[in-house]
Image 1 (spheres, one colour):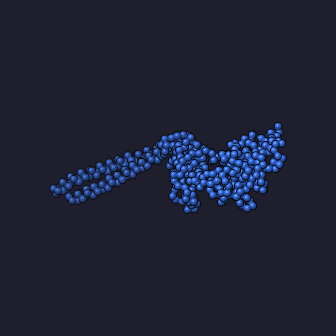
Image 2 (cartoon, rainbow, N blue to C red):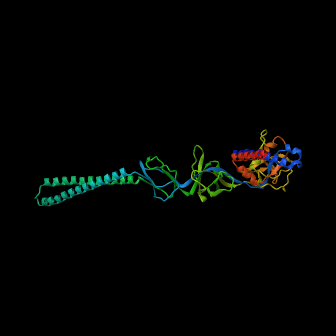
Image 3 (spheres, rainbow, N blue to C red):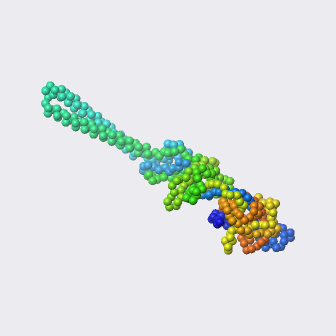
Length: 441
């Protein structure tokens, strides 16, 4: 079973500690004086941890992007010049509260013109109705005279035609009035858009609005969102969907060191059922309370999705696995003569490191990886309780069968595996600087 790139990086990163370890061990040799066999100067020094028996939590490490709940960008709906900016970055606003006001004199004038046009059309309608009513009354009087044969048919036909024309004038005036009302409503709506209001209750940020600035509908003014309730989005491949499902526990790490206990626990809230037909991936979403304001929208955060446990096996850190560059065989170096009564060092103080053992036999044993976690693996080929080398395997690769061993705890090794490579290098450089300063004194 070949290791993932993550595991290889862990191993390569830990190799940086080897040089620091050798320097430290050299100091130990000098301090011990005659009590240490002179041959020990050619014996490599390594760190080892005791293998244990158990099951691995199965997890998928993903990179997530943080968004605020209801996060939206604010744009003006009309063009104009900014008159007032009512809020600043980081301010909390209620829904409907003004954010930015544009200069509105032009729009107010247009509203006044529309209102005046409405009054004109209201007057025209009244005039048309009055004319129609007048003709209707005249027609009724003429009709009575016609019934008494005191009026001619021609006069009746003339009045009917005039009434039809007056009725059409009323219909036209009513239509013009509706048009004027619509125009007024449109101008009032444009005037209202000169004030950009908060569409939700939340916190504003990413300010891009200054007084006097000319803006249009493509100018982003602010971003607003609910910072107390966040959403973390992760990308899921079609392969992951065989194991990952809604409701599973997730760990969202809130610092650059994604291997400590500084994480927020939540659940996978939803998975989009539609896969991208090019990348064959989809989005998973995690709703999370922003406890302690540890997360910020736009952050990239490591996310572990826990989807089960492996079968029980002998567990070793990923950094213990060594691949022979010649044969490609995977295995671990085991300090065969160290017993289980040896106690590991919980911490290693560069100024006062724990003692190394006397030269002890070290043997390379082939293993079969049967379960792979992110920080540790389950293997066949060694028994629980064996001391396996985690730092300094390259010093043993030339066939050396002895080493001086500094025993370490699981917690220390896992913490080292979690460090970034630049952090490891800095530790080595700091250690060398301390030694050089001590030598010069």
